[in-house]
Amino acid sequence: MSRTHYRTSLPHLDGPIHQMITYRLADSLPLKTLNLAPKNTPAYRQYIERQLDAGYGSCLLKIPSIATTILNNWQYFHGQRYRLLGGVIMPNHVHVLIEVIDDVSLTTIVHSWKTWSGKHIREYLTANGIQYPPGIWQRDYWDRYIRSQQHLDAAMRYIQENPLKAGLVDHAEDWPWKVNSPLE
Image (cartoon, rainbow, N blue to C red; front, side, top):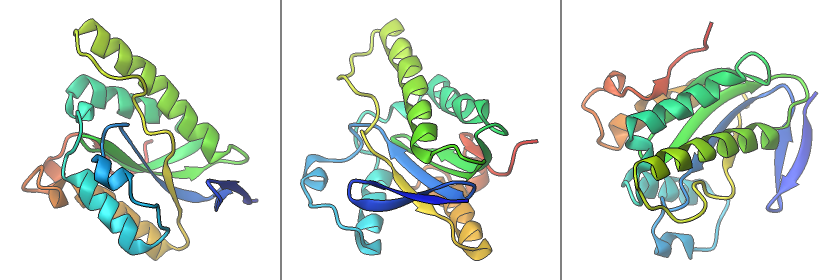
């Protein structure tokens, strides 16, 4: 059974439901975008997506070992906390589609992803002499409750086509940092 909780004064659902989550690196948006008052509208969300796809910030997620860390992180609790349905790792943000299992809160899931991967990203940066300010990830995340099969199909299509839309590849299937279907 799903339940509602509030984060940043907006309602969010938890429980055995499908969710699309977007989280990003702390430096992934230009200051002018961050200074805009957040609006919960489709136009604002599309504006943010265009800004993310423009490739601002350090784009640490384009480093193959870091992208692999994110993929491994998502796969770790597949089948225990959630079913991993799809995901894409862009240079400065990620989109992931899951079916939450039982009573695990989305906040717990995303917190574990960001904490574990943040630690490993920091270790990689330190080992390679790369300076990065404190805080790998943006503090919050975007979540979208999937309401129907049509919505689920659209979310999966968005995830699969995001690298193409951002101009990173000529064919969506050429992007290496993705999960296109449920893992077995």
